Length: 438
Image 1 (cartoon, rainbow, N blue to C red):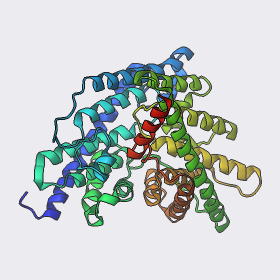
Image 2 (cartoon, rainbow, N blue to C red):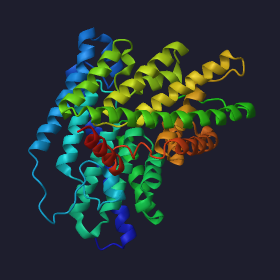
Image 3 (tube, rainbow, N blue to C red):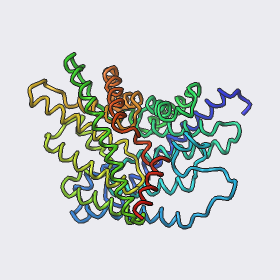
Image 4 (cartoon, rainbow, N blue to C red):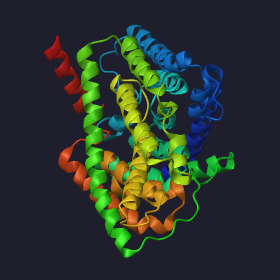
């Protein structure tokens, strides 16, 4: 603590990065173990597990997981005591809110309950991402470390480092982890403070690789660089990606409104969302989970366009049902899946029309980046994340303008990003809907 402030921040960021990577590794191992115990999945492959389950178990498992998660949060909230007058404000599991408008203090108890509930939803096939809970866990540990250090640390900066570390370790994307903080939290974080965030993200990535994780999440053979005509088509495709991203945001908002209007108790809402996923999985088991397996398939051996279209439609319904019910989990990876599927469909349509011998993996990569930018409104982070996840450095000059276009188009139709959904403005919206239906 005797170091100058900039050096002190770097030392703390290094510790936060290591802690974040260890937290992500521990969560992943615990989740995989729970998935094996509950549905027989191996190594996180929920789709394969769903294919092997009897139809009745495939339908009921997500509902039972949602019910268990809802009961956990419901009973915990009932036993919660009101904070004492004048006590420091703690944000329960919302690290973005804690940094953007708060003091960096996260409610550890509330956050751990949310992580546990997310684990129950994800391990039984819920159509949400497991990475959201990973990032939250890393941010909570960072908040706890910052409070232990005390005045020697800027708590909001420390939590930002934790979020960047969690994202870098979860997606094997250190640059995107740092830019996630810069683009989404920069309103309350000075650009000069970005250095510690970068250090935390890189440290988390390094520790993850040391623990045995591969450096690239979706290894992909080098994609041939597109010609000038293909570049023009892809930039036009990014406009479509922006429109579809805005539609996805509106669908998530509409699904949430439907559940709020139903006024169901939390356990019943979670169970209903899970039951919807289970019923949809009777048609295609790919609706289970966050879409990781399907992304890998689109990037390597794309299925027939009719199968891709059906899985995409069912998956979007499943995502809306799960997130609309309020079940905890991320939508980052499901969004990447939707982008990869849309890209594969666009490639198939262009090839069928004889416009070009479009490369399915190439359009899938561009679709992932464009849809992610359209839903997060963070184009630079989205381009870097997809480049790091696939290892396609040569495509970065194409991904950047495509993401910028998609984000601009999306903002025209949906002013609130996916990180606004569930934030203070959205909570106020839920309260208005509840009041009108009372």
